[in-house]
Image 1 (cartoon, rainbow, N blue to C red):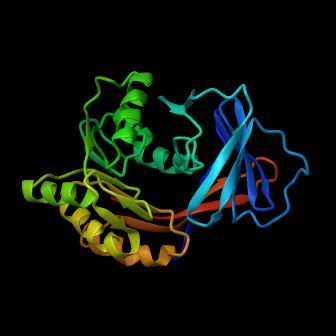
Image 2 (tube, rainbow, N blue to C red):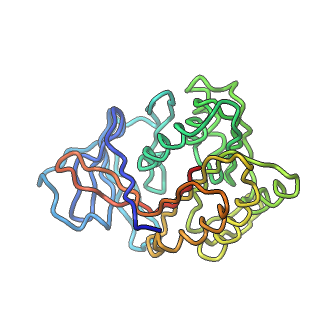
Length: 287
């Protein structure tokens, strides 16, 4: 290991971090602007006045809560795009917009490593943007999430992207149960995308806790990598965990395969001043 990397998502046509500071961030999502809480934006904003179509007012506890205050012109959902993939954005109860824009740099990286016919597994796949990026690049994708609502949204995004008939398996299941079954079946994948939450529940009430369950998850991932595998991506949004802690896990999972491991921060570049706003930590291996 030579040091920590910074993986930066640059602004694109449908998304940008306009300004940040004072514990908040101003973003554009398609034709709308929103303000959201951002504890890591400890600096002063570039502009003292922000114009927005809505703001998320956070609750009193650090693990969630709060509500959106939206202007009448904001619809229930609206179309957005990145490259060949189109998807619906919306103001969710959890302060998100139905996708994670800081994954943009990861999506570009994995798309460049896929060969037609590769098998790719996207665990905790949410609304499916990463799955559709892989499918658009020619992969046969298995998309897994414990939320029926998220998987239904992912299928809608596939239709919006013209990928309704692409070879994607849409699966609602508990992550550990699904991975253990895949190992028993002898399934193998050329690429793995893992974006686990800090805490969650499976469709039958199974409890997921990141710090406790991540080592088992990565060990199952190790057993699913094909001999000719090309990548493994792990992103973590738990602020209290260091990227340094991810390196031994990924190193053990890819031992003997060669290639390169990168670990570090994910960040979005602010448009106003070029500042980097950190959002998550990551580890990835590429053959």
